[in-house]
Length: 324
Image (tube, rainbow, N blue to C red):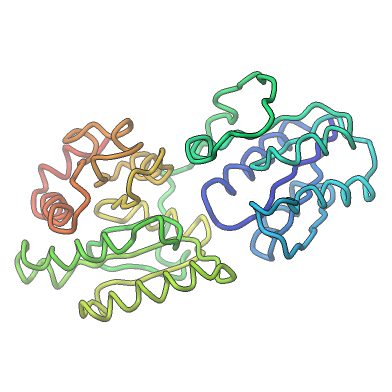
């Protein structure tokens, strides 16, 4: 089939990578994929070129939420470029534009449903008919975790023990909890242990977003204020090999977003047999069995630090929290 995949804006979040994985899955099944989006930078084009036939990028000064959603404009531009040749439309994260795409292309729409948005978005508009729901929408993704990544293969290698905070550099991810907890850890472990441990914050960073720039500045100021410049590193926009290195070698994964709906990072840490320390609210509660494959802690710095000290000082506890 010829499939038109439409996505508002490729930033660096889990949802964007989820959409990319779906495109790859369809490509692997032999379908031809065409992409229409409002933003796809060099980083993303490096991923997209091998899997898509053609790409349309429609830059717009509008933002999602405006009365005239820019994806409606994208729909018309895509129609002018490719015409009515598609067997299916893959539409992500913009239900407003669905009627326009349907009118122009007259093809079935596969809408990628974004669960958290259904919780925060008010529904006072025209009622829509019920649609079939497919879950899950992706086949299992296999990561070759057992293929050890060597120091020579990566740009950043870490000596000694380190905690990993793996999430997008954005305010809602609450990396400051990891920094503050790491600062509290100093009082809970021997000096020799403290001197050898680090905190590594890894996440995708979108500099063009004001809130992300401000948040990066906030994190750096906090690190400086707590005098952790030599102990805490922020590393942004790493490739999959580097990410795999961090997951393979970290002591434990810190999952800091408050009341996160699900948490792909939790699954990644568990897949690599690493203890995950997460809060007692939100999606991680449904994934982690406290004391068996991770620790569920109250989301404050001192409590998180106690969990970190537990896995750092007690080898037996650390082994018990590993899945395999």
